[in-house]
Length: 111
Image 1 (cartoon, one colour):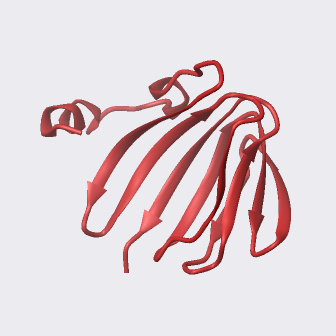
Image 2 (image 1 turned 180 degrees about the horizontal axis):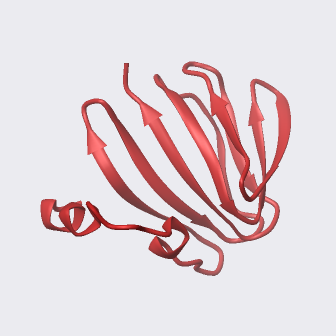
């Protein structure tokens, strides 16, 4: 993201749901913050799309903005809907699967 694009989002009231649009059969993302301290990224998943199991070196907070998703962390499934969030610990395998079209905000803390 260019500095100009980031600046356009600062000091404004933002509805993050409007920052990414659904696309059929796809996952769309937009990074809002990318600093040495961490990242904030908004995602839009079409229904039945997902991210396969993987690990990350940092803790991550996943907040569902709209829709419903199945989040799997170390083999345990969690069903989340709009307004709910879950913390995914660093180093634990996790996956994301859209039940319906859904949007999420992912905040990754670099420590």
